[in-house]
Amino acid sequence: MELGRQHADACSDKTLGVFDGGFALRSVVRPLVRPDEPGVPRVDILTRLRHDARLHALPPPTRRPGQRGATPKWGPRLPPPRQGGRWPGVWQEGRAFLYGRVREVRYKEVVCLWRVLGHDASVKAVVAVVEGYRRRFTLVSSATDLSGLQMVEVFAARFCQEDAFRDLKQRLGWEECRAWTRQPIERTTQALLATMTTLRLLQGELQQQRGDDWWLHPPWNPHKSRPSVRDVERLLWQHREGIRRCLSDWLDGEKKAGP
Image: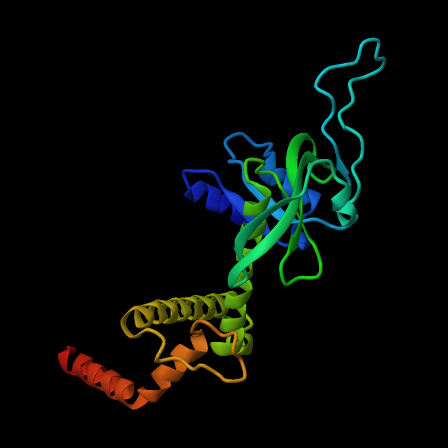
């Protein structure tokens, strides 16, 4: 929640927080979408729905003639997301860039109320059948101006974070960090993030200058279509002697120029 608010403070436009369903809790979602404190920016959310999430249709805008009692805050309960095909509306079809390639998507969307967020804020729920995946995607967002196809594409883009965590841990040694106080952990993490950013920038530059002739095209993985951090590491390892000489000459120059 704090990360979302910090990002909103740094941006002048709308903010959308995309996270997994494990954080779709009332204590996280409500303060972001409906902040109680004055001056706190709103942060819209996009997350995965539980298959048994409680969704309700919007209440009628006007009271029926002769209706008694208080005005209802919740409309009729909708089928759970695992039965999203029963939601009102028609199935739509489209194409989106998901997990490395353009895929066919068949989806249905509905504007409704979500028990986690409360009756004061409407949300858009989406159930989608994505090409190449057996299980349906069930998503919800407080940014109701997004289309269902855009919601699926944005949520799939979140997986790039998992790729970054994998590269940090397995390629750059983040999981091997042995530190017991805060400062060494922060220094190590910042150094690794800077290193990975540099490798990614070098990867993009190599792609522009040399094309695809510098990274490994493994015969056992015909689906690999772009280089990885490991490919950049392999290339740098081939030039390690030159890099060492360059660093040695630089350090010698620093010593000679010193007081």
